[in-house]
Image 1: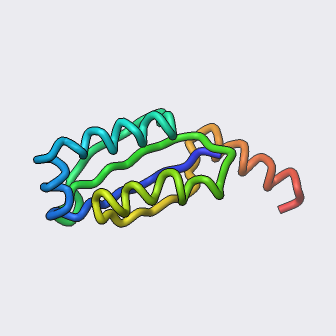
Image 2 (image 1 turned 90 degrees about the horizontal axis):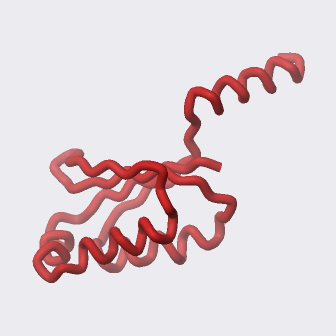
Length: 101
């Protein structure tokens, strides 16, 4: 399943992580763990934000292995949601119509 992880980083905690060098280490560990197909960095509502898109078959390990380091290291807020690309959406509608909708 393709997932989107949105990480909204606390400004004070992230400033500290930038200054002590731990921000890039956290991001590198995250990327090594989830192997994203894409990562985007932006500001949203005045805060540093990361959007990562990745495939997973796991669910229980996501919270402990992915979320906890971000909660602890960056005082981050996280959103995790399944997402689809165009091909996924077309397959979903085709299956839905086939089932008699």
